[in-house]
Structure formats: C-alpha cells, structure tokens
Amino acid sequence: MRHHTSTHILLGAVRKVLGEHAWQAGSRNEISISRLDVSHWARITKEQEMKIERLANSIVMQNIPVEVSLMPREVAEKTYGYRLYQGGIIPDRQIRIVRIGNWDVEACGGTHLKSTGELGLIKILHTERIQDGVERITFASGFPAIQFTQDLNTHLSKSSKILNVPKEKIIEATEDIIVKLKNANRKILQLKERLAKFQATLLLKKTQKIKNVIIITNEIEDSDVDFLIKTASFITKKEPNTVVALCTSDETLKIVVMAGDEAVKSGVNAGQIVSKMAKVVGGGGSGGISFGQGGGIKLEKVSEALSLATETIINQVTKVNP
Image (cartoon, rainbow, N blue to C red; front, side, top):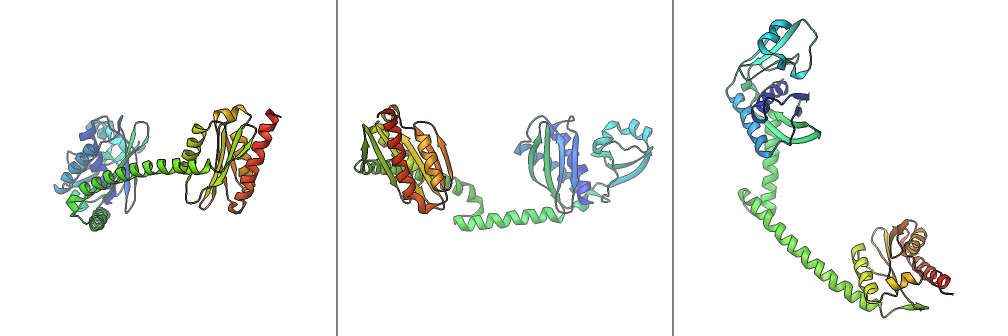
C-alpha cells in the first residue's frame, strides 16, 4: 500500500521536475523495494533526483488525503483528461479513480493508504537508464526507506572508522587517498620500467644463437604479463635480431613471445611459437609475426614449453636460411 501510494506521489514530482512530457512507462511495487519507469529524453541528474525526492516528501509531510472513487469513464476523462491512464488503459465503463489532492490523479486498481502522511518517508535509492528514452527510479518508502538510511549511516560510520576521520570529512579523506594512490602507482610504473630494463640486461647475457638470430627463453618468477612485455620490448629494441620467449606463473602460466624486426626478416613468427608453447601447457595462444601471447594451466610443463620455443625458432630460421 505504501509503495503503490508512493508511485503516485513520485510520478507527480517527476512531472514537476522533468516536465509534463514525462509519462509512466511501467512500475513494479513490492514490500521492500519498488521501481517507477518514466519516459524522458535524458539521464536524470543527481540534482533532479534530489529535487524529485524533496518534492515527493513534501507531499508526504502535508498528509494529504488519498481519495478513491468510482466514476463513469466519460465523466472521468472529461474531468481529468487521458493522463488518467498513466498505468495503462482500464477497459471498464466504471473507472476507479485514485486522487491525491491537486498533486496526482490516476485510474488505478491498486491498494493505497488513506493519507500521504502514513508513508513516513520516500527514499530514492538510485536511477538508471533501462532503454533509450526511459529512466528507471528505484525507491523505498516507510520502514524499508528508514532501513536503507540506517544501513547507509552504518556504512558511513565504518568508513569513518577505517579512514580515521569524522563522517563529514570522508570525501576529502577519500580524495586524498586517491591522489596518493595515483602517485604511488606512477612510482610503481617507473620502478617496473627500471626493473624491466635491468632484467633485459641480465637476459642478454644468457643467449643462444642460430644463424644471425639471438634466442632468449626464460621463466621470470613473481611477475606479470605487463612486465614480460616490457622486458621483451627493451630486448628487441636494443637487439632487433633477437626473439624472446618469457613465462611467468601464479595460478596459471602466462607466455609472451616477441621478435625484433631483423629476427622477423629471418623467418621468426612469434604467433606460431606462442601457439605451440601454449598447447604444451594445456592452454591457448595466438598473435602476429612479431608478438604473441598465451597461457595454460600445466605449470609443471614450463621447461618443456621453453625448450619447444627454442626448437621452433631454430626450425623457422633454418627453413628461411638453410
């Protein structure tokens, strides 16, 4: 009953804020939460949402009687117009009219309160665009609305305790943390760049050679795909005749293969290499001639995969350069 009545009140507030073009496109009323869909060409802004909520609650506080009556269709339409059918056309000759003062009037068969004051509170939980030209307002009223505000206050209290600031300072504290996090991430990226260069230097000391192509294969522990790519990129830019096959693992094995420009000219195809390696470790991979990426789940097969990479590179190079 509360949510049925709230729907009428909210619809009146929506028309006041968004304009008379706003039309009910659907609704669903439940005990703890309800929704109202309205036609509107743009997203409902936060400012509009707050204004709709304030207007709706002003009607609640005025404790306006909710009048229900039966009227002949012709009389109802002549008196109130076709906006009566916001909730859909009612085929009966006698129409059940629900009227809240001068705020809202609709043909409706739902159950309602006797006055708006019985609602206690209407709280808009959120709005979203569900399709082109239709906005959804999800709301609660009465005790569910109070429960929502209490839960929200509990979250604020917990956040305040975690951040060690008063509730009114949570936004400033959060913004400060975000700034510090961005700065920390920037420094981490710089350190990863330096570490990748250092790793590349070490790997260039552990190479094999076939014809004029340098082969580097290695497993790098406690790493990620981004670090493998950075390391391989430093190597192939410094030594364009190099092909690099690198692996790292956590729950799964990650593989990166990169070939320098001169290595590609010598017949190396990184995509083919990574595809064969990934099959060995029970996964998949693909890529182009200069870069390939893949992975698998058989962590114990990493040595076999790296050996296969070397074998494949040798076959590719000798095929082009016998």
